[in-house]
Amino acid sequence: MRERSFSGGNVTPNRPSVHFYAVSGGLKPVSRPTAERLRLNGCGFCGDGIWNKRNPGLKLVNGVLDEAVWCPSPNFGPRPAAEVSLLVIHNISLPPGQFGTGCVQRFFQNCLDTSEHPWFANIEGVQVSSHWLIERDGSLFQFVNANDRAWHAGVSTFDGRNNCNDFSLGIELEGTDDQAYTEQQYEVLVAMIAAIREAYPLITPDRITGHEHIAPGRKTDPGPAFDWARLRAGITTGDV
Ligand SMILES: [Zn+2]
Image 1 (tube, rainbow, N blue to C red):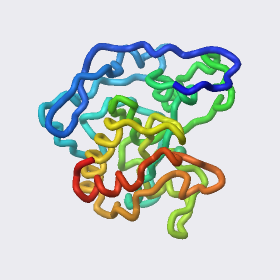
Image 2: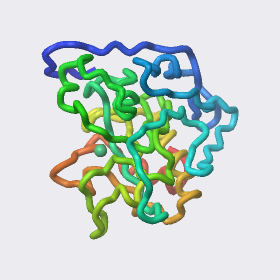
Image 3: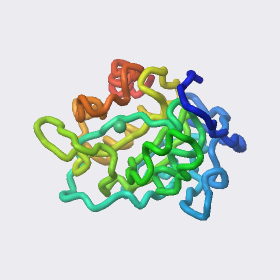
Image 4: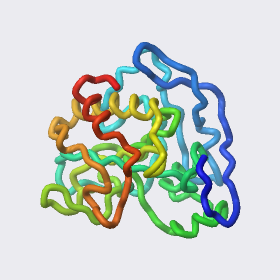
Protein backbone atom coordinates (compact mmCIF):
# COMPACT_ATOMS: atom_id res chain seq x y z
CA MET A 1 0.00 0.00 0.00
CA ARG A 2 1.32 3.42 -0.84
CA GLU A 3 2.15 5.91 1.82
CA ARG A 4 -0.36 8.69 2.07
CA SER A 5 -0.08 11.94 3.88
CA PHE A 6 -3.06 11.49 6.12
CA SER A 7 -2.82 12.96 9.56
CA GLY A 8 -4.14 9.81 11.17
CA GLY A 9 -6.59 6.98 11.26
CA ASN A 10 -6.40 3.81 9.27
CA VAL A 11 -9.57 1.99 8.48
CA THR A 12 -8.89 -1.68 9.07
CA PRO A 13 -10.45 -4.02 6.57
CA ASN A 14 -12.40 -6.75 8.25
CA ARG A 15 -11.39 -9.76 6.17
CA PRO A 16 -14.28 -12.08 5.58
CA SER A 17 -14.78 -15.74 4.82
CA VAL A 18 -13.70 -17.42 1.63
CA HIS A 19 -15.78 -16.98 -1.47
CA PHE A 20 -14.86 -17.24 -5.11
CA TYR A 21 -14.24 -15.10 -8.08
CA ALA A 22 -14.52 -16.27 -11.64
CA VAL A 23 -11.49 -16.62 -13.86
CA SER A 24 -11.15 -18.12 -17.26
CA GLY A 25 -10.90 -21.85 -16.76
CA GLY A 26 -12.46 -22.02 -13.34
CA LEU A 27 -12.86 -20.42 -9.99
CA LYS A 28 -10.36 -19.37 -7.41
CA PRO A 29 -11.07 -18.83 -3.75
CA VAL A 30 -10.59 -15.31 -2.52
CA SER A 31 -11.46 -13.26 0.47
CA ARG A 32 -14.70 -11.63 -0.31
CA PRO A 33 -16.84 -9.15 1.53
CA THR A 34 -19.91 -10.55 3.11
CA ALA A 35 -23.20 -8.91 3.79
CA GLU A 36 -22.24 -9.03 7.45
CA ARG A 37 -19.12 -6.98 6.97
CA LEU A 38 -20.98 -4.34 5.06
CA ARG A 39 -24.04 -3.97 7.20
CA LEU A 40 -23.23 -1.22 9.64
CA ASN A 41 -24.92 1.33 11.80
CA GLY A 42 -28.34 -0.06 10.99
CA CYS A 43 -27.98 1.79 7.71
CA GLY A 44 -27.64 0.20 4.32
CA PHE A 45 -27.90 -3.38 3.32
CA CYS A 46 -25.89 -5.66 1.08
CA GLY A 47 -27.09 -9.09 0.10
CA ASP A 48 -24.72 -11.89 -0.82
CA GLY A 49 -24.19 -12.39 -4.53
CA ILE A 50 -24.11 -15.74 -6.22
CA TRP A 51 -20.78 -15.31 -7.91
CA ASN A 52 -19.57 -18.77 -6.97
CA LYS A 53 -21.13 -20.55 -9.89
CA ARG A 54 -19.11 -23.13 -11.77
CA ASN A 55 -19.70 -21.29 -14.99
CA PRO A 56 -20.46 -17.71 -14.06
CA GLY A 57 -21.93 -16.87 -17.48
CA LEU A 58 -22.50 -13.28 -16.41
CA LYS A 59 -25.85 -12.04 -17.60
CA LEU A 60 -27.56 -8.73 -17.15
CA VAL A 61 -31.25 -9.38 -16.62
CA ASN A 62 -33.68 -6.51 -16.06
CA GLY A 63 -30.78 -4.24 -15.24
CA VAL A 64 -29.21 -6.50 -12.63
CA LEU A 65 -26.15 -8.73 -12.68
CA ASP A 66 -27.16 -11.56 -10.38
CA GLU A 67 -23.53 -12.42 -9.74
CA ALA A 68 -22.95 -9.08 -8.05
CA VAL A 69 -23.50 -8.41 -4.37
CA TRP A 70 -26.55 -6.18 -4.34
CA CYS A 71 -25.97 -3.06 -2.23
CA PRO A 72 -28.83 -0.75 -3.13
CA SER A 73 -27.99 2.93 -3.16
CA PRO A 74 -30.68 5.59 -2.74
CA ASN A 75 -28.67 7.87 -5.05
CA PHE A 76 -30.35 7.37 -8.41
CA GLY A 77 -33.30 8.49 -10.45
CA PRO A 78 -35.15 7.71 -13.65
CA ARG A 79 -33.41 8.20 -16.97
CA PRO A 80 -34.93 10.97 -19.11
CA ALA A 81 -35.00 8.48 -21.99
CA ALA A 82 -34.58 4.74 -22.05
CA GLU A 83 -31.36 5.01 -24.03
CA VAL A 84 -28.21 3.47 -22.49
CA SER A 85 -25.37 4.02 -24.91
CA LEU A 86 -22.21 4.81 -22.96
CA LEU A 87 -20.06 3.04 -20.38
CA VAL A 88 -17.87 5.09 -18.05
CA ILE A 89 -14.96 3.59 -16.13
CA HIS A 90 -13.90 5.16 -12.84
CA ASN A 91 -11.75 4.46 -9.85
CA ILE A 92 -12.41 4.96 -6.18
CA SER A 93 -10.94 3.84 -2.88
CA LEU A 94 -11.87 4.99 0.59
CA PRO A 95 -9.87 6.19 2.28
CA PRO A 96 -7.86 6.89 -0.90
CA GLY A 97 -5.30 4.13 -1.41
CA GLN A 98 -6.88 1.76 1.13
CA PHE A 99 -8.68 -1.27 -0.21
CA GLY A 100 -11.36 -3.70 0.93
CA THR A 101 -12.55 -1.41 3.69
CA GLY A 102 -16.26 -1.51 2.88
CA CYS A 103 -16.22 2.30 2.96
CA VAL A 104 -17.10 2.69 -0.72
CA GLN A 105 -20.23 0.63 -0.21
CA ARG A 106 -21.20 2.71 2.80
CA PHE A 107 -20.43 5.94 0.93
CA PHE A 108 -22.73 4.99 -1.95
CA GLN A 109 -25.43 4.04 0.55
CA ASN A 110 -25.11 7.36 2.42
CA CYS A 111 -23.99 5.38 5.47
CA LEU A 112 -20.36 6.34 5.76
CA ASP A 113 -19.39 7.52 9.21
CA THR A 114 -17.19 10.44 8.32
CA SER A 115 -15.56 10.43 11.73
CA GLU A 116 -13.86 7.15 10.74
CA HIS A 117 -11.04 8.92 8.90
CA PRO A 118 -9.87 12.54 8.56
CA TRP A 119 -10.01 12.45 4.77
CA PHE A 120 -13.74 11.71 4.86
CA ALA A 121 -14.37 15.36 5.73
CA ASN A 122 -13.84 15.95 1.99
CA ILE A 123 -16.92 13.91 1.09
CA GLU A 124 -19.20 14.75 3.98
CA GLY A 125 -22.77 14.99 2.71
CA VAL A 126 -21.86 14.06 -0.85
CA GLN A 127 -24.47 11.81 -2.45
CA VAL A 128 -23.21 9.76 -5.35
CA SER A 129 -23.35 6.23 -6.70
CA SER A 130 -22.31 4.07 -9.59
CA HIS A 131 -23.94 1.03 -11.04
CA TRP A 132 -21.08 -1.30 -10.10
CA LEU A 133 -17.86 -1.58 -8.13
CA ILE A 134 -15.14 -4.15 -8.76
CA GLU A 135 -12.86 -4.54 -5.76
CA ARG A 136 -9.19 -5.52 -6.00
CA ASP A 137 -9.92 -9.24 -5.59
CA GLY A 138 -12.58 -9.18 -8.31
CA SER A 139 -15.54 -8.99 -5.93
CA LEU A 140 -18.41 -7.37 -7.74
CA PHE A 141 -21.06 -5.09 -6.23
CA GLN A 142 -24.12 -3.48 -7.76
CA PHE A 143 -25.70 -0.34 -6.32
CA VAL A 144 -28.18 0.89 -8.93
CA ASN A 145 -30.26 -0.93 -11.52
CA ALA A 146 -28.71 -0.39 -14.96
CA ASN A 147 -32.02 0.88 -16.29
CA ASP A 148 -31.89 3.69 -13.74
CA ARG A 149 -29.69 6.77 -13.74
CA ALA A 150 -26.83 6.52 -11.25
CA TRP A 151 -24.98 9.62 -10.08
CA HIS A 152 -21.42 8.86 -11.15
CA ALA A 153 -20.36 11.21 -13.93
CA GLY A 154 -21.36 14.69 -12.72
CA VAL A 155 -20.74 17.57 -15.12
CA SER A 156 -19.61 15.74 -18.24
CA THR A 157 -19.66 15.65 -22.02
CA PHE A 158 -19.30 12.81 -24.48
CA ASP A 159 -19.34 13.37 -28.23
CA GLY A 160 -20.86 16.82 -27.81
CA ARG A 161 -23.58 15.65 -25.48
CA ASN A 162 -23.77 16.80 -21.85
CA ASN A 163 -25.03 15.09 -18.70
CA CYS A 164 -23.57 11.66 -19.35
CA ASN A 165 -25.44 10.19 -16.38
CA ASP A 166 -28.59 10.39 -18.50
CA PHE A 167 -27.43 7.77 -20.97
CA SER A 168 -24.50 5.96 -19.36
CA LEU A 169 -23.55 3.18 -16.99
CA GLY A 170 -20.78 3.62 -14.43
CA ILE A 171 -18.28 1.01 -13.26
CA GLU A 172 -15.93 1.85 -10.40
CA LEU A 173 -12.66 -0.03 -10.11
CA GLU A 174 -11.34 -0.03 -6.59
CA GLY A 175 -8.00 1.70 -6.98
CA THR A 176 -6.05 4.87 -7.56
CA ASP A 177 -4.92 6.65 -10.72
CA ASP A 178 -1.34 5.44 -10.46
CA GLN A 179 -1.48 1.94 -8.97
CA ALA A 180 -1.81 -0.96 -11.40
CA TYR A 181 -5.25 -2.56 -11.39
CA THR A 182 -5.35 -6.28 -10.63
CA GLU A 183 -5.70 -9.25 -12.96
CA GLN A 184 -8.99 -10.10 -11.32
CA GLN A 185 -10.35 -6.63 -11.98
CA TYR A 186 -9.56 -6.85 -15.69
CA GLU A 187 -11.08 -10.32 -15.91
CA VAL A 188 -14.30 -9.34 -14.20
CA LEU A 189 -14.48 -6.08 -16.15
CA VAL A 190 -14.17 -7.81 -19.51
CA ALA A 191 -16.76 -10.44 -18.55
CA MET A 192 -19.11 -7.72 -17.37
CA ILE A 193 -18.71 -5.65 -20.48
CA ALA A 194 -19.71 -8.62 -22.63
CA ALA A 195 -22.89 -9.01 -20.56
CA ILE A 196 -23.56 -5.28 -20.61
CA ARG A 197 -23.16 -5.03 -24.37
CA GLU A 198 -25.52 -7.92 -24.88
CA ALA A 199 -28.19 -6.05 -22.93
CA TYR A 200 -27.28 -2.60 -24.30
CA PRO A 201 -25.95 -3.03 -27.85
CA LEU A 202 -25.62 0.74 -28.33
CA ILE A 203 -22.51 0.52 -26.11
CA THR A 204 -20.04 -0.07 -28.92
CA PRO A 205 -16.31 -0.32 -28.08
CA ASP A 206 -15.77 3.34 -28.98
CA ARG A 207 -18.46 4.26 -26.45
CA ILE A 208 -16.53 2.82 -23.50
CA THR A 209 -14.69 5.70 -21.92
CA GLY A 210 -13.06 7.00 -18.75
CA HIS A 211 -14.35 9.61 -16.33
CA GLU A 212 -11.20 11.63 -17.11
CA HIS A 213 -12.26 11.77 -20.77
CA ILE A 214 -15.79 13.03 -20.22
CA ALA A 215 -14.82 15.49 -17.46
CA PRO A 216 -11.31 16.59 -18.42
CA GLY A 217 -9.64 19.00 -16.02
CA ARG A 218 -12.11 18.02 -13.31
CA LYS A 219 -11.60 14.26 -13.04
CA THR A 220 -8.52 12.09 -13.51
CA ASP A 221 -9.85 8.55 -13.08
CA PRO A 222 -9.27 5.77 -13.96
CA GLY A 223 -5.88 7.40 -14.59
CA PRO A 224 -2.62 6.38 -16.22
CA ALA A 225 -2.63 3.07 -14.33
CA PHE A 226 -5.56 1.84 -16.38
CA ASP A 227 -4.50 -0.25 -19.37
CA TRP A 228 -6.90 0.78 -22.13
CA ALA A 229 -5.10 -1.33 -24.74
CA ARG A 230 -5.60 -4.40 -22.59
CA LEU A 231 -9.27 -3.63 -22.14
CA ARG A 232 -9.79 -3.03 -25.86
CA ALA A 233 -8.07 -6.32 -26.69
CA GLY A 234 -10.15 -8.07 -24.05
CA ILE A 235 -13.37 -6.70 -25.48
CA THR A 236 -12.41 -8.03 -28.91
CA THR A 237 -11.18 -11.47 -27.88
CA GLY A 238 -13.30 -11.98 -24.74
CA ASP A 239 -10.13 -12.78 -22.86
CA VAL A 240 -7.53 -10.78 -20.96
ZN1 LIG B 1 -14.98 8.92 -11.51
